[in-house]
Picture: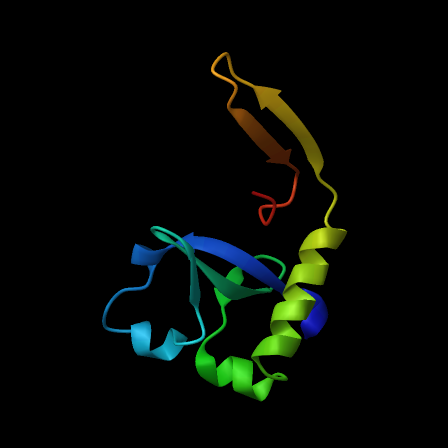
Amino acid sequence: MSERVYLRLIADDMLPPEIVDAYEYVRPVAEGLVEALSLDLGDAVSMLRDSDVAQYGGLEKLRAAGRANLLNDPFEYDTAELDDGTVLHLVAGDSHYVA
């Protein structure tokens, strides 16, 4: 199971109010953005609920596995500097888990 878990950034409004209680482990990372755990089912992706997290090893174990799986996905990284000195960090890859 842990080899199919990925950390995922989603908009905080993707969790409808009527089901938000099932995702109490989800944590904010920036304004309007939260970190959740997803299970890759091959042809679909399912967000893990609190009950799934408890059943499959706990939050810290799954969060570590999700991060490790992200780091194992091939990706390209580059930077670009704008005229005003702002530096953009660009990350791209074939996997839909790569931001």
